[in-house]
Image (tube, rainbow, N blue to C red):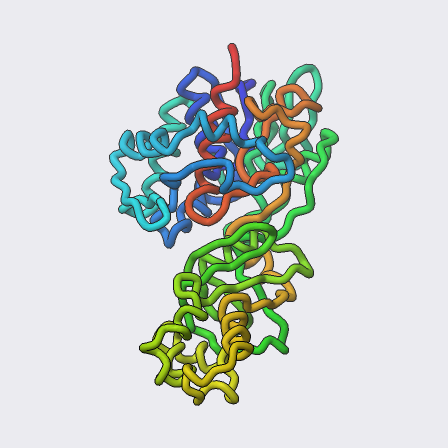
Length: 389
């Protein structure tokens, strides 16, 4: 039996593609080496699935080719995702920064999508690995652990190597090279950053505070968390998408309270320097940032150079990470199949007709906040809508 399409990967993008195409009358076989669909989706957002964001726009995506995701993001709005949830009877809630989560376990969304795929005629083939893939006579032939499948269309929706505990690999990217596609080197993103042993602020594990972290021309104002090995929290996870080896982070520990203004206010003149900053910073952090030579001085007694030194220490703490915590701790990976050889409207290969890509296998990565899952929906939907009988 020859299907209309073979989809490699039963994650968010693969399921969306199969559901969309199936409802349009195309027969699909979805292959995945995992025992269930959507392993990453089931765990995303603490199990509740940060499925999209209220504020979808290209600025929340990283990729070598600027503007590539723009058209597909416009064609897949936040309301589209919310309508899908409603169609499955799944309620949702909006949290800070526009993040939208299911109010039930994300596993229910995955199972609902899998059921919709089957109802639309798709075959979901789990616990299957694939080997050699050939294209001849207008058909893709995929050798699997349980036989050969054939179809005139092949969709690679295998994701990225981030989060290997969920079965993630770079298999799709290696497969893309078979048809002459370039692959932008992958790197872990949405990951904690490790700092050198000489860093002056080691030993503050567990301390958290609102901060502004700047790197690569972007600034992120989110909570920051000190860890045993370095820094994490939303501010750092976002910054990791733009950080490159050897670059310094610039951290403002008090973005809402200019330190110079605090020190110039008359009512603070009789406070000690440490006493003043312990009111606006976590105590352990204040004790590290304020040098002993200034800590017990009255604010009113500070010289101009001392005030400027303190302001710089608080508002522009500069440190160069040694590396990220790696793919094992990354929620996503930047890099992937180079989009310059992919049609931005249909996601069809410009090198091999009938070959398509969807989801994180492409060199498109969303930032923290539901953007990656939204790209999976948008890209899977675009592929499934592009085929003609």
